[in-house]
Image (cartoon, rainbow, N blue to C red; front, side, top):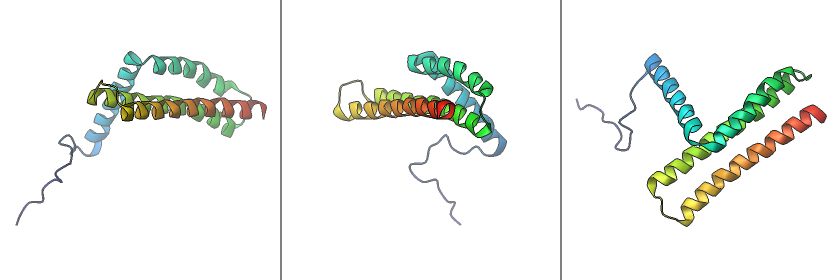
Amino acid sequence: MEQPQDPPHESPFKGKTGLVRVWNAFRYSLAGLSAAFRHEDAFRQECLLAAILLPAALFMPVDGMGKALLIGSTLLVLVVELLNSAIEATVDRVSLERHRLAKRAKDIGSAAVLLSLINLALVWGLVLFG
């Protein structure tokens, strides 16, 4: 009987399962956070904002749902910034030459960050003053 083979486009890095996979994923995530903090000014600035807003959210005189919205909207900015940074790094890895599609990808990622910041301001404004 013939052994099933991996699909031709499957990553050779796949294959770990169970707790080993969870542990590796955790380590890769920490490495990603570290790389973003070291190399991305915007991520560092948004981490500073989160360092102020997250504790503040816990002390706001709002109910649990309000606190969840304040915390969630703050963390969303960091998530979107990480994705934007990943897009930018990937585009730069492919080519550093100016190209309309590279610009479009980077601009769209930047627009996503802008929308997450607008969301942050709206959520905080509505929860605290709405």
